[in-house]
Image 1: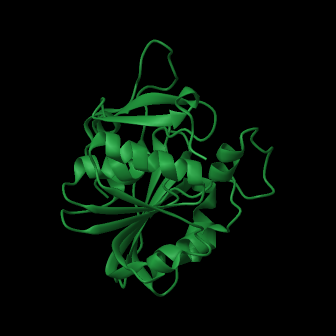
Image 2: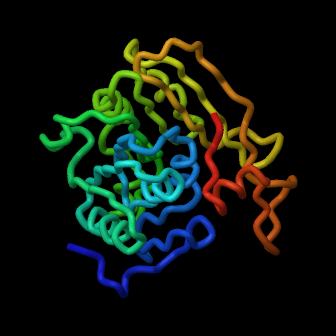
Length: 252
């Protein structure tokens, strides 16, 4: 069942270039899908599959940056899939949304391959922490399908030479790396630190199918300027502001 309008907010992304409807209660996109989209090295004419596209934030941020990219989203929850289609149409972008499970792809997707696969998988293992009160948020944040299955599905759907791009909690980097195998190479990891001198809270991992470049661990991307949070305005670093506000690419 689709979300009623009364259950939605309309939120600006990329300084208002995108206006996305999101549930008032449930999973709401913030900076992570924007950073994920910025890290995908897509070019015009290429094909992209997003696993777990939610309301479409990452796919549509990529569409806003890369002209004529062919986008497909896979989404488990029908109400979020419907919202992604609506957001794409209202922003003037083409996004094919397929309803289905990462662990059991619809036949149509199993027959296709893509230049890029991107994903923002659920961050928390099933047994970790307290369940969210909203079922949609719980599904988006706590994995029912193991992270290794997300990675394997992504690899299987890539063309030779295609790129897998994933954003995840830093503590789950060992799981991400364990999910890669000899099919993938040219692995690069970008840690994301909230502030200078703090441990990374997130990582972006990018790997190439058939790639041969050595593993590369980059210096952290610092998200916020200054040592502490202040309530009197945003304090993103210039590089991060360019991504979140101007839709710039994240050079990895």
